[in-house]
Length: 519
Image 1 (tube, one colour):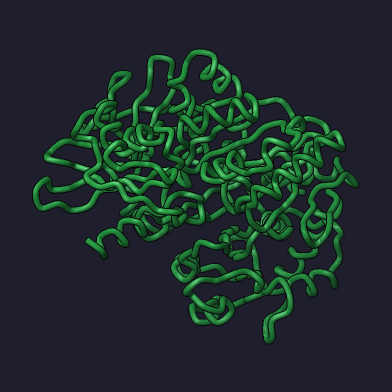
Image 2 (spheres, helix red, strand yellow; image 1 turned 90 degrees about the vertical axis):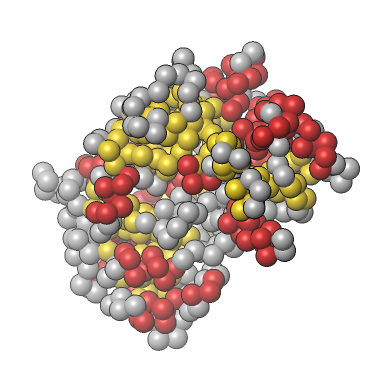
């Protein structure tokens, strides 16, 4: 390896080499040791190199959670090829937009996964001009990456990636517009990992269950744990019963287990009928994030699962901002319930500032836009200097989130700037309204949005998953008592379930469109 080789890559190779024959990954297709992971990564790298991919090129992986989310990523890292993971799941991703915008030299896709309205991926990739298309399994007329890789040598290749090479091209969720590409170099990933790390190594024998997309936050956690010698279990989709079964097995066999969940999945776990009879003693930690969590349900989770929860607050544009650790959760239950509404304190090296409309720094307790600076923050959007100029103010990223800091540095979200609802000229932040409704014992989940109103300019609409005896008038009164009449939703719509994005967030755009179509 040359001296200029990216440390992010060389350190991972060194760590995986050290763990050798230890079990690294399990999935429906089988199991891989750390030595297997490295060998498969070198085989895939050779296939890509034979196809002509070189440092500076791009590859997009469109799949669920197969082992290639790890091995293909490592292969790209060996070659210095930028890697764009796109999750194919129950929620449709804007595949064509991402492929056109990222302009990769190669696409690898899983033909067994749903593709959404874009249609067959191979046809789409050729239509947008991508030179090389590989499948993960047999597809007529498309080279099978697994078959091609099996014919190659697994011997080590030199690392072509440098600190300045682009490592990842990630895409935002697109909840408020078309997804935007966010590039990160290997040097930035190293700095971000240092900011997010610093805690104790994983407990011996830990198994980390990936039940949400590896392409999102779970993958970052999993890769860090793999470096520490933990085993990663890859599931294609989340199922609360299956997760409980795996926890029970771990408890019976005496090894620690952990996972990452979106808040709606955490709620499903808490509501599962098998929870009460499951031995949870093996649970080492449960991380959660990606969308706001209901404080009452979080309190329930701490009481049921123990003070082992960890929350992370991040964006695609800032892959680590703040965290709320197990000690914070325990403190919340012990006498600081307000912490249940917090996303935690800034990570090491990260600076959080709350700014007013004029850009000036606001005092503790005042709501404004959250600005972030530090090693986890992007340098700009992919090929969009116009959007970068609007998102960055000096070294600070304008997150688009509203919130406030308390005197101890804990950060509290109030919603997105674009989701703030102006009722009769009054700024109504949706997060406090959602929290107030979630505190009602009849409410299980809630999402609040705004709709046009001829009398008040905008009106608040709350979509609620609730017990059968829930009463809309009582829920309105509940919010009015807690926050004031201006915050009481004009309409409360009971729904059996929420449509969700691929990031596990309630799809308020779809809910809002359905409401407007009938009113």
